[in-house]
Amino acid sequence: MSVEPGALVVVDASAVLAVVLSEPERAGLIAATEGVLLVAPGSLPWGVGDGLVAAMRRRRLDLNAAMQAWEAFDAIPVQLVDIGLRAALQLALERGLYAYDAYVLKLAQERRLPLLTLDQPLQRAARAMGVALWEVER
Image (cartoon, rainbow, N blue to C red; front, side):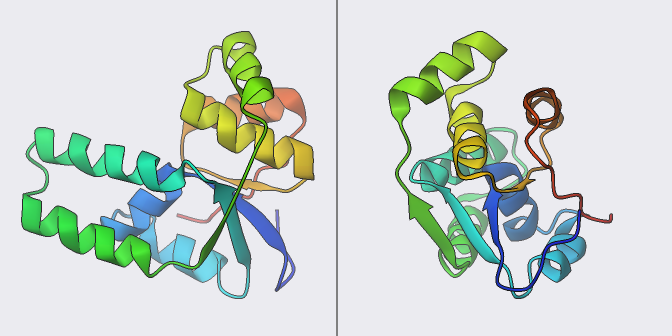
């Protein structure tokens, strides 16, 4: 799905982590988000932090690299917005999602915005709900 410059796109932690951890999708994500306004639920920093801790536990990162990744995340312009937690938690239970994923999906659904995620279970849930996915070339 192509997005007009200045358009709003919901982003999740998987896409952000791919950028700050220099995953193979990094270049495509950066190119695809130029001129786009990224929005996410207020839980995004916690999800990114959780991903960084998981990478340290798997010994993919040391503390210094995790702190550098956090600084890179802090430089990404993302507007954090409130969502209805009750409805998001209900969605998580109905769809068998993690709460973090339900927060992102609920935001995209409620605001009728495309969702940028690399998480395949979240992509499947979005498709099932009719939420537009913003595909990024790899």
